Length: 70
Image (cartoon, rainbow, N blue to C red):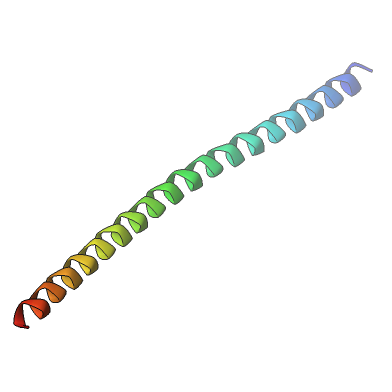
């Protein structure tokens, strides 16, 4: 009868450990994905901000030059 208790205990332990390992893996993967997403979104936002700023700077320069001709 002891072997049955041991078998059931080992099975339950392995099941719990596998569930915990899967949960930890999912949490780590989610954290890494969130981290990289924030980095990529930050880089894209920075690039868009620089591009828009440069575009308006060039547009303002063009308008000033155009008005100076007349």
